[in-house]
Image (cartoon, rainbow, N blue to C red; front, side, top):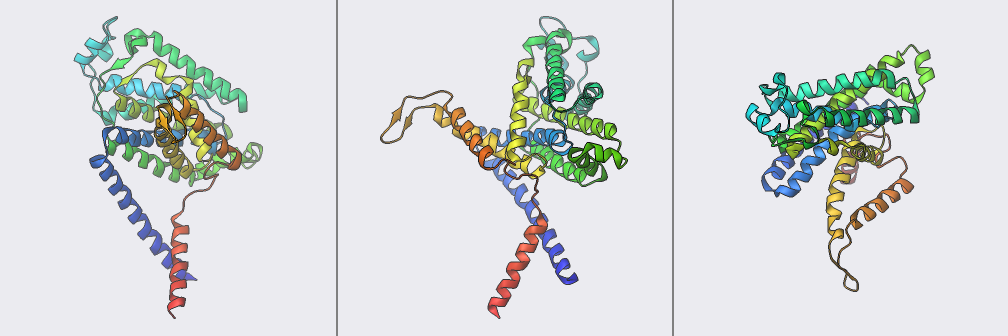
Length: 358
């Protein structure tokens, strides 16, 4: 038995190293051989992995129904944009009303600006979560959705800081292929470590039975607010990455529909599954673009169409409906991909082959 465990652990280490090398190789090939448009879709999937994991931490693992992610993304995106824009660019961008003096000459590198963006989103998340997390279920969803809209309206009206409805243009394109996939990988590693820690077990206990968790000595309020703040930090980082990929942001981009798109990924992949968030992000983002040909003229041999704008969303909705009907727990449910299972399967195949040869 001990020998089998050693072999399984050895196979697991080999597969982990091989998987990392294969992933790095695929990213390298994509960066060098894919066209600009497919590469953009792939990079967008990486950013949505970060955002889906952040929402899954609250909705899937802690059991809090939050719909305020778009607002925290906006805080992160605007913070990083204002810190990385050059003073000359700020002067030309803020033409209706000049930017306030403290921000006019600030120009930071990307990484410090990204961390500050996450911290600002976490701070706003703490201020929002402290009163809102006293609510539950649908009431919490309505409260966080309302706070998200308040954040968007505030960003629209503080002209000397955010340039109002005109938004910010000409942002540095820092979100390259290697950068976004590094943060996607870092988010997955962080979530795995967090969920497998004592804090992660406390989150799942609150999700399953809050009263029992409190009876076992878990500080429910502290765990909830900590989970919410961490989620907001990740949302702020994801919003900053998204802004630096598009090189332009405005308040209308961060409407509540953006939160629904992330929630769709979480539900499709499986609430309470890290692997599901990764798979859901890739499936949703890539399939929505792949189905774009349905909006144009179609030649189906016996039937020809001149083009029906919006048809791809109809087909995509039908596919989602089918998934919800036949796979109500999502693609992964609450299960995770495990190298242990792969190693054990390979060990069984190896034994079977040995018996066959013998």
